[in-house]
Image (tube, rainbow, N blue to C red; front, side, top):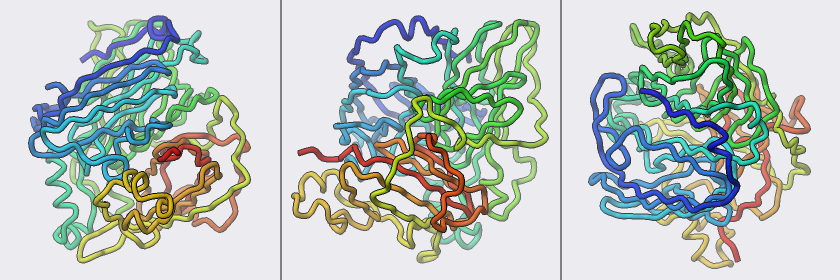
Length: 477
């Protein structure tokens, strides 16, 4: 299939806010992105689900009907901070109840951000069954617009032949703990733009803004455009000072987004590979197991200069030297947040509870509440809404408005993990390498203008430190 390229003069021609309406029927369709046909969750009878393109300042109204028949659902707008509209966040059990089969909900919010985002189901493990799509917010004042001729989107994901309810039941079972050490299911394939043979038509001697979204279920991804240099200009909706990747490699975790500039060659005699691999360290080696025989974690798509020329073989990769995204510098040079008003330390690990492997934070598991946390906060009264006990066994932290919050995450688990913060973008103060040790009160060499994003991978045997200002209350008075 061919990706639709948007010319920036058409995208950025106006700053007038509009109301953008969508009417979505979420239901089952059949698709075979890697050649294996299976039911997937689509929108209006189509899969992959549509990309949303809006301009900053637009009001977005999405009427969602749950036509699945056998599952509840809901949509989270990943990275949208929802200032004043936290009830539109879409997180089941926190901001809303799930939409039952045959039910309908209208999401209505104003987009006051720019950059690359995505939407996905936030109900159980549902989105790896297909309910996700890119959400791109265009900026009439895009700082690099003069350099860009067009844009397109790349999505990266791991893919499974079995549906998620079955995989979850198998994963969260005593049989899995005893026979598989509680390890996660193994994906059958990696996909680029929901396919194993995506082609993207490009023109010679043009600079493209490429939005990259990792919509995966578990492992991170490493990707490249063969024989094309990448320049990072945005992560998770925050513009960056240009970062030339050069001969290094780029890694992206589940939930993260990134925009890069690539300039095509002034020659149409051949086509070039877009190559992606899922992290086999996360899948296997960090958990003390080997990949299955002949397991293929790679997928190749293609930059097509010449439709008459053959598609190239995938590049041969001998090793990786990953760029450290903590070294990126935000374009607005926002200074480090200080002083810190409150520090929260989270120690993550896993535990065998009643014969089932469970992840823990500070030795506690998460038990989903019967009433969404936002509903409790809005209805229980001011005398109780600041008491964490009323929110159930969800490890709650009640924050004071305006405080600078520092969160330290120590990863005692054998594997690395992505963390996503709803409602805020955070500054990354520090992050260790794998097995870099746990937080001891020192920050090492940190930037006075730290990278700001909303999703970050913490390394196994290491830690990360992030800060944000608690300026997005879930309730207003």
